[in-house]
Length: 121
Image 1 (tube, rainbow, N blue to C red):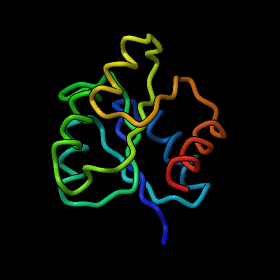
Image 2: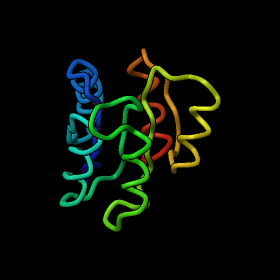
Image 3: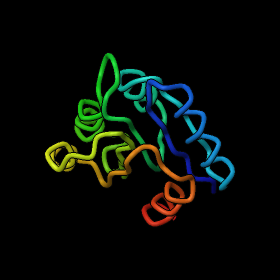
Image 4: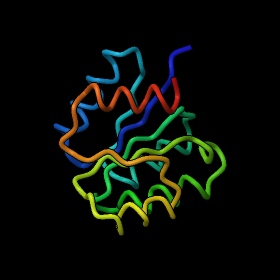
């Protein structure tokens, strides 16, 4: 069965690049424009993984992770932060919120796929 990955990013170009890369490698993709949109979609759809930006309007990546981890449907899914932020303090905040991993933008498509395959196969 095809794995479903949600990508949450306020940048349409980043969403497109992530979605294109994932689809080329056989994954189904659900796109969300920010954390609030992602939580709404996650409430009614089971996904295998979430890839989220940190800095987004309405609800940032940390708020999104906390929301997912406190819910029931997708509480245990792996969550990867895909962000320009590389400071150890920000990574620690992400880990404390429940992030599984961290990828720095700009990223190489093969780097993203390597992480996805390592985490969900």
